Length: 175
Image (cartoon, rainbow, N blue to C red; front, side):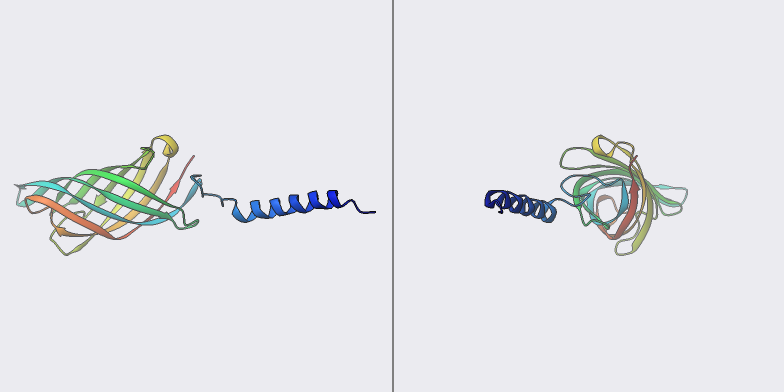
């Protein structure tokens, strides 16, 4: 004879397992960071610049801030950051910049980049960068990225600078 109560309990357990399987977060979801991966994203900045003529070239110092949204290309997980950058750019040698990215928990990523970061308005420029560390959940992170910039207000003009990426992607590794 079959115990109906026993069968009901087995059915409820099976249903529970199926629901957990369907709705459980995949690796890298629900705030969990995967140890390595690739990303793409959108990054917009605006800020100020000051320029001087130096040995026949305009040299600009700039401070930029703006939002970045990065999506893990492997899991689809997205994170939003507020970014702050400082840098130097000139017409002869290109430029260098350093950035701090902070997420909603105020954990930070530290970035370095170099390339043709700034220049005439409306011209796309390229920069290569490194992820050189972080705090909190990003402690020990490393990685690399490339970004193509399009500015509509230039660092080579006094005052304001604003732009956004036309391409932004890279990879990271956590210890």
